[in-house]
Length: 427
Image (tube, rainbow, N blue to C red; front, side):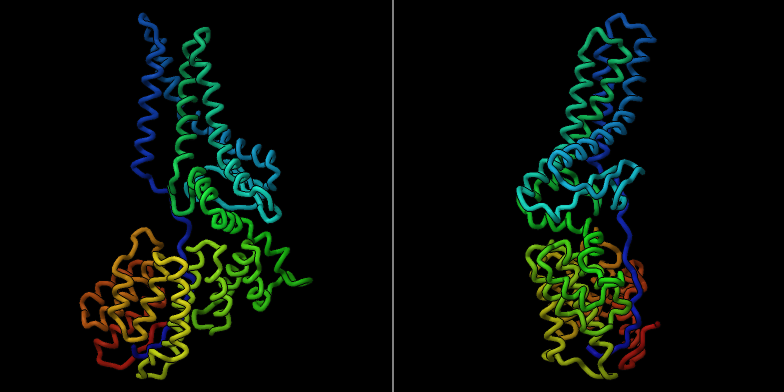
């Protein structure tokens, strides 16, 4: 591939994903509504008056959403009490907009209880599973209490109807939190987290460390007396045996980069990070894949005008090795496959690049998809399919027009159209 001159890559990351209303959520709400109304109707005596029927209908109907809101509080209090009983240090607590301690709002969640596991050494998976199950358990206990009130024939019809709504809301909250699913890109249910702690404890602990990592960085990695963290210190911290420190150090190390072409100064730290098995594989693949892409762009930008890249040069081989580490960490990772595809384009192997990016996940972030489409477009252009390359470039431009890879594809397309050997990308 001939050299072009990409410009500065400015931050183009997507924000937290919004809550997607799924068919399962709608069906669960409909089932809860039907069960509530049918159950409340079954309480009415044969000769019930219109006033009694109205109490049963509206009392249960209004109690259902009110009960759902109340059970969010019950759920989080269950987690909170369990954390205290299990002697886990609580660093964040949120119910709706009430937030205490550290943390941030996660799309799709109504609350959280966050704990710091940095000082916990014994029975960590078992304690976390108990903590996660405590929330749904609290909902079930509260639902059982209101169900007992429904069964109490000495209580008034109106009170029993209200108890029906609260009971169904509690059961629904418990079941939906126990089901192993991911309602949004960021929010995972207690059931899914508990399964990960049971079968992938190292990965689960690293995920928890991601939440508390910024606080740990302030005490573990900060330079004494300055409050600042030199890059050399961050690179050293990436190899710290504590996952939370390594994750935080890498996050801050990459966050301090203002250009994609700022050299190879962090490549060894990224490679070491990608090879660690105690960190989440998708995080390792994303970090190393994106860094390999930035190195590929920097390599293309450093080539003399009109010169073709040497596919066997040490520089290209090093980029290839880093892309290989990303694929090894997670073969399905789109950033890893994008890095692999860009390396193959640089090595003049467009067929391999096309094969790596034939399937681009539609649920990935726009910027991630844009990079993948751009690399696929470069491969199609080298294979002689200019029309397909233009189509892929249009898709990538609609997703993230300022991405360096998208601008690279636009520049190469313009270059091929005008017959020039190279062109610049607008800064």
